[in-house]
Amino acid sequence: HMIVTGKELSGIRGWARCFPRGFTLVELLVVTAIFAVVVTAIISCLVAGVRTWDYARKYSGVEADAMIKLETLHRDVASAFRFYAIAFAGDARAYAFPGLIDAAPDGDYQPEIGTIKYFFDAEKKTVFRKTWLFPESEPMDEKAEKVLTGVSEMTLNYYSLPSGGDSGGIWQEGWNSLTNVPGAVAVVLSFDGPD
Image (cartoon, rainbow, N blue to C red; front, side, top):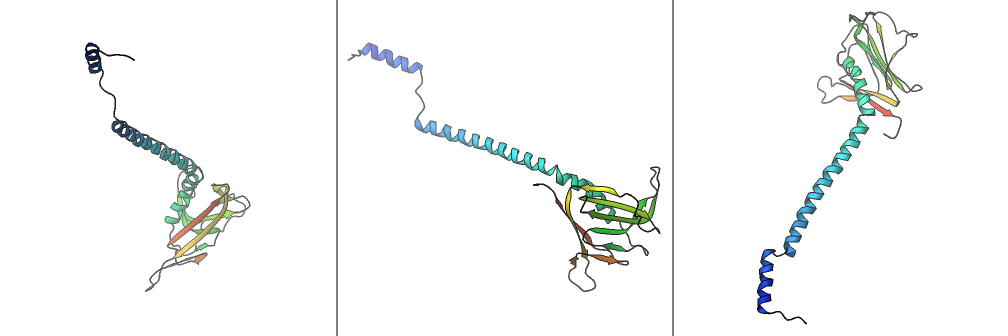
């Protein structure tokens, strides 16, 4: 056993004053809770960032390529007009309509009235665009422009605007009218692969 004298006790008290007392259990719990909240927030941000990067990586592949290439189809359909000799005609895999096409072979843009046709070739898994000037008929030997490749299926639907007192239009799988145009054309694409 050790006996502590009064002089030694006062020395211990002086020594204790030099070093502040330790943390209490409550203080340690509060610090631990704050640390846990900060770590959880950082991990949540990292997980969200990884998910966003993964989604963007997948989207920038197939969907972005399709969106960019189908912008041509969108512009052509949006700028289509009624023309007495060229009918708007379409089915589930092809759509032809009157429009302005470039007739200059040398690169100078000289728009002339012609027919624009988009069609899907299931064997080649490709969406094509073909144009020809009015009053010519569709050329069979001319190569068509590739719009989008790697497509396993393409379906076109046409929106018939309501007539007269009708309350709403309908979607249909085919279109053939010289005097009327569809209110909208929906293009549904399926691609090969897991995405």
